[in-house]
Image (cartoon, rainbow, N blue to C red):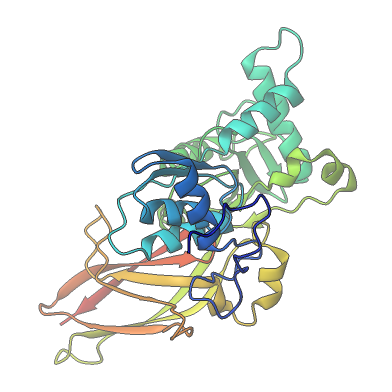
Length: 357
């Protein structure tokens, strides 16, 4: 049959239901058949397809399968994570890069909110830090470069809008903290430092905590919420700073020199809730549901993370393994790095020292 020309209202493609193979559980997910029709009708192979609100990633997934190049964007961390997982599930998927471009929104906000006529960059930065410190209920301090405030005896550092907090930043904070001890009115009263940031370098949380502990610093990391850019939320006082994900791992070492078997068990995992959609929060009944997958490098050398073991959820096996065991061939001291990827795609790592034999 010759058929007929497709009309402007399409009723022949059914929505994605909960039983569909392609269902990701994303509320606004579109069927792949719909995007396949649109992409085939409007592009050729190797053309570039752009989706500025990718949601569950239907557009880049279909574009990839049809041999198109693609760019996908979304403001939601959850959407980006769902999209990344979906793309990785495509057989023969080409390499792609996940980039965070959120700093540009923050830069525009900072410039509009704190820039007065002929204002110097330093005064804009000072006004921005005071604004964040006020929302954190901290008092500004002077004569420091890396220490910007104090709250409850703990010093406070405010990260910039256009760069993540890094291990190098923490080293500078620790060095300035050490010099500031016992120097006057704004000198540290405790060994505590709260680090506020919009973004944090990968693996900073757990690794930096251990580095800080070696310098006798009690460091806590808090994410600056996007709500600070919302005047209504600020006026209502509805601003909450959530601490970064915290991971607890129990280690069972060999009981004798005759065995070299080490066991790890995840016992708790906490993530900040400000980025998590309400419907997802309500569905979480146990802390392990925050974990999407986790992996272990049993002999971490301080360079690249080598994924020597991992476990993840699938449709057929939704429950996550919380324990794993490894047998070392040679006696000695080993550094074990545990990496957890949460349901938003954020990395949290923990370094452990084990001795066998």
